[in-house]
Image (tube, rainbow, N blue to C red; front, side):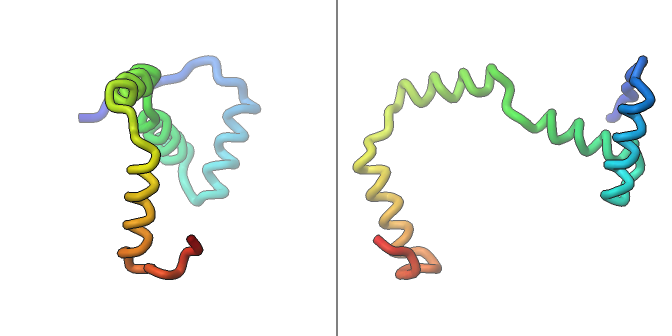
Length: 85
């Protein structure tokens, strides 16, 4: 389901710049702004970052194990041997 959003009191200069950015991308102002809103909505919130930090703090990473996993993936991956050690 979609909803309508209205923004009031947008200065003409700002609207004109948004229209120019949209035109540069071959989009309508509506399409351009919807893309921008989707991009912003997809970013993690402060709560998301705090939850991630809490999980990270409860399960610290052993750097030697992490480096070993990276090396293992590098050595066995599709581009094995292309990266310097």
